[in-house]
Amino acid sequence: MNAKAEAKNTRFDALKWLAVVVLVAVGVVGNQYFSAEPILYRVLALLVLALIAGFIVLQTAKGQAFFVLAKEARTEIRKVVWPTRQETTQTTLIVVAVVLVMSLLLWGLDSLLGWLVSLIVGR
Image (cartoon, rainbow, N blue to C red; front, side, top):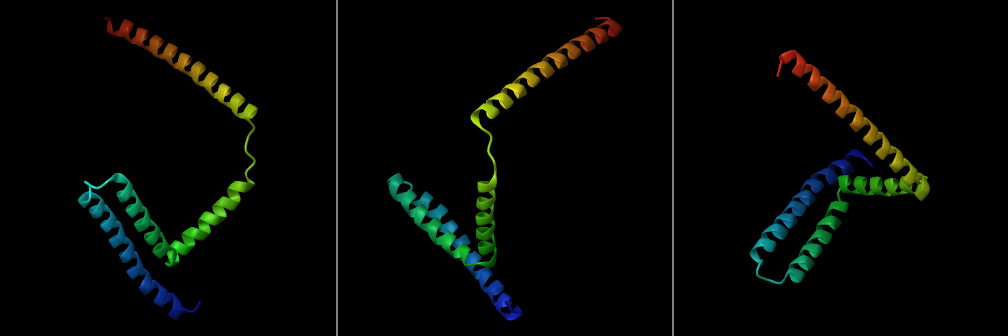
């Protein structure tokens, strides 16, 4: 893209973000104003406003960059080798055992130091 096109997008991006802020404000104020209406209608209205705001955000440069980032993150997550159920269980049990041992050691150290301080202080 050339500099003119980028400058034009940036100028219009500010207006698009302003429209998104206005839509969010309308959703918040409208939800409060129509609090006597059934929740289903208010949720549907908020969903419609969220979809419209999301569509407008995707038309901005930052919105498009976020969409690309989300797609790339999804691709990377698919590459991850997730542990099996057995590996997860074993790792969890090891963590629980280490936490128990450390808590007992710290409790013992705390008791010993408390006893020593009470001997020094004379209580």
